[in-house]
Amino acid sequence: MSAPLDRRQRAMLAEMGIPLWSPPARRHAVGRSPGKPAPVPQADARNTPPQPGVPAPAAAPERGLAALPPGVSGMDWAQLAAAVAQCRACGLCESRTQTVFGAGDRRADWMVVGEAPGREEDRLGEPFVGPAGQLLDNMLAAIGLSRHASSADAGTDAAGPGRPLRGVYIANVVKCRPPRNRNPEPDEIARCEPYLQRQIALVQPKIILAMGRFAVRALLKTDAPIGRLRGQVHAYEGVPVVVTYHPAYLLRALPDKAKAWQDLCLALSVAGGAAAESN
Ligand code: URA
Image 1 (cartoon, rainbow, N blue to C red):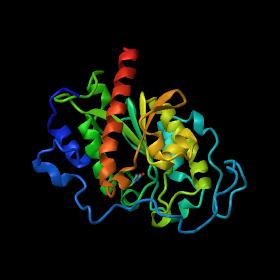
Image 2: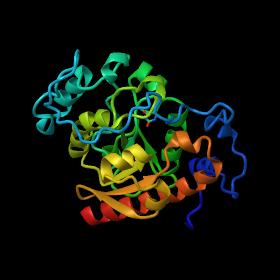
Image 3: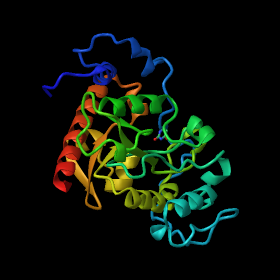
């Protein structure tokens, strides 16, 4: 990149640990407590072996659970949000405070897919609002994106220094917090999957950033490690997918922050290309 870096991008490079950084005043805004890592996916606390098959949503519900509502794939935003809010399709509904549907610009070119709500997300009902979310917001700001912006207002130019922030839509693979932030289980992911599929179909993003292995698994159906998948452009239903590390992991893995920055640059170039093609 030869364009001069603006303040946002400098802050991002700082966060990524890239040397050209000079200390900005806002440094504390990102990754503010390296000694106190965000909740990260832990080994499955229940030690339950993976389910061999994906249970059909219509399978007989367990006690207190209910089948997924019919017709998720044809729902509009309001119907989908209501369906998620009332969902009792897996055991995670028993321990959640509330569901965490998604946030941001529903007409965005960019979509970020994470894993599952953590404690703060469960409390507030919004994805990525804990420490990992602060890092994510700063990473996105560095490439000109904000969950609070509307792409419609920002024109069609690629993000760049001095340009207004553009919108991004953020959603998780699983809409309810797994107890103690354990990994979501295969059956929980499978039951929740139609919601994410419908969110993607409604947003119609030009680029999806898959953050962490659960997002990768859900979208790309592979267990390959992030390190092997990043650096290439994958596809989900025809939408380009760039794979990167989960921000919660980045909070404790300093060297990989630089790689995440490379991933964002790759996604930026893919999104720029997609925007150019559609103009
Ligand atoms: N991690 C995620 O994957 N999603 C959230 O919403 C928060 C943390």
